[in-house]
Amino acid sequence: MGIIAPDRASAGTSSAIGNQTAVAGAPGTLPELNPQPENLYARLPQGIVTTSVDQLFQWARKSSLWPMTFGLACCAIEMIGTFMAKHDLDRFGLIGQVGATPRQSDLMIVSGTVTTKMVPAIKTLYDQMPEPKWVISMGGCATCGGPYYRYPTVVQGVDQAIPVDVYIGGCPPRPEALIHGILKLQEKIMRQAKEGRRPTPDMELVLAGDGVAAA
Amino acid sequence: MAIDISDPSIDTLAPTESQIVEERNLETVEMTINMGPQHPSTHGVFRMVLALAGERVQQVEPFIGYLHRGAEKLGEAGDVEGYRKAVIWLDRTDYLSVWPNEHCYMLCLEKLAGLQVPERAEYIRVILSELGRINSHAMFYGAFGADAGATTPFMYAFALREELYSLFEAVGGQRMFPNYFRPGGLREDVPADFVARVGHVVDTGYRACDEFDRLLSGNEIFLARTQGIGVVSAERAIDLGLSGPVLRAAGMPLDVRRVEPYSLYDRFDFDVPVGTRGDCYERYLIRLQEIRQSLGIVEQAIRDLPAGPIMGNAPKALRPPKGDAYQRIENARGDFGVYIVSDGRSAAPYRVKYRSPCFVNLQGLNDMVVGAYVADAVLALGSIDIVLGEVDR
Image 1 (tube, one colour):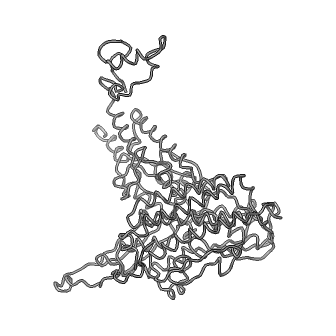
Image 2: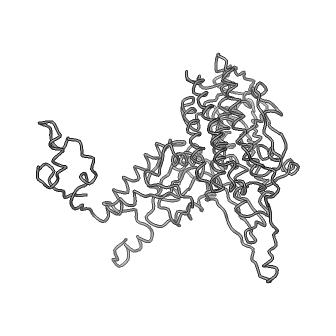
Image 3: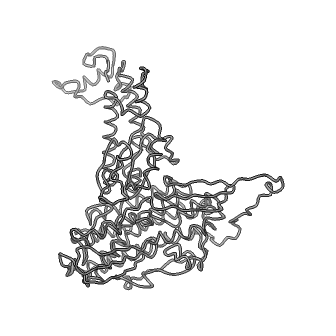
């Protein structure tokens, strides 16, 4: 985002507090290296923030990803642990919804082994989530089948059923690893402002149609 | 805890017939609803189809198998050291308290192969098994509170679990599945500060238990929701083959650690909490009491922990003689058993079978849920304390 802010280095009367920092520093030090004053308003850029609508929307989306409670197996326990007080996920905007419905979620953390019996349910739940939506595949089983290599009823990775954005390895991944994956997803969401999101089936129809702009 | 659990004024099941419906000859329709496999309160991928008349459950049909991962079949995977490898899938069956299941498998394998385990290793195994039981019961406490609508106890439960996970990571290298037990002993010795750490964890555990009690056990909403719900009588429980806290709440003092002591449990002094009424509240109280008893066992084991080797005479290439062995233990959920069949020459077992207590305890769901409200069905299911990894294996 571009920021148009008044010139801080100038010792003009526009900001008396800015003056104080220039004075407080030792002679010979650059004004930028002086510690910022505690006043919040002095620290905000006094001016206009320019950004693109895409970036603004993606920033809003990444800052409040609401996951659908989708714990399948052991990774779910670590995922629940990541929501809890020691490694809080609420500070990243992910709230542990009490009413876990796919209709109001935008993130699906597939945590645990995906079996062939479960795939129709996963597909239904994924389809029930409204756009924009992202999927994190947490743990070895959801990524590639995990320790259950080539067992007939275990699907070797949930990406055989639904598209996945971030893969997290581990059996189970530590809470820190899950947080890392979520942060990577947030970076990906911001990148999608420029690169565009994964086309959904209906978007593809629109794009193939008579030129109506996609949402 | 000043709670009167024998209060008869608590209304359990009101009559199923509705006066209004009868007087006005209203037509009612039986509704079939589906709970799961994705549901916040099914404790995993468990599905129940309930036939309801209003809010009352007339019929319940459980569906399992959404997490069938082949722990038994994969145990026969015979390429390299299958006997040692089979335990990693067993870990992941009861993923809440990992250690008791690992312990059971190792005991069974040692029984089959005739391996000796040094005392120090066995003491450490018992300590970790009991800590695993505490881990599982703490999770039960949190999840059961959440089922009843209390979201705060979950946080406190996980605070205790994080302490335990830190200890497990220090001992075994990983929080959840350290794969630390070996046939004949342990992979390596415990760190130098093990005794001090476990002492600290025990103190934390006692304080946490008191906190759990203060949070939930006397809460009148919780009492109204759990007392008298999901009752199974002792005779019916025996008929169904239930075990664990579900059976003990009904009045049968059956704990495998007492009935068929294995490992070192005959050396420790601990009580087996038993209930009288067989309802959800008593199962909850029993599990909280069991946390305290387990902490007592851990204290005694730490006090008596001998020095010595931690690995017995297990050969690198384990080929037990032809035959079979069965070992039962008291899991956090009930009577867990491992059955290993060896054909005498393969690198992997011919067959491993796990007797899962949750799978059998789920048979009691019908008795607990039919005739009760839907909300009670959720609590009854929670009070059985199922873990789908074990049900589906």
